[in-house]
Amino acid sequence: MTAETESIILDILRKIQGDIAGLKQEVSDMKVRVGILEGHMQGFLAAQHLTNDRLDRISSHDTGSESL
Image (cartoon, rainbow, N blue to C red):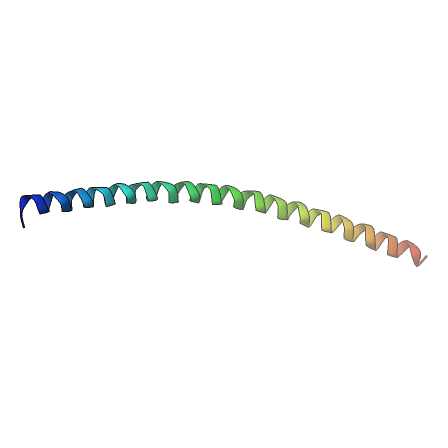
């Protein structure tokens, strides 16, 4: 291999290395964002569960009073 060929290959490898480093950072950022979204989703699901429980209690209360 000539010195020029080696230089070209090294330049290409450095570019690939830089691209991979950028992708690693983007993946890391996305993991953080997904984790935050998961936390929010858990909060929404907990709130929905509480709302459903309240509606069930109201419904059973209304049904119970009609039978009297």
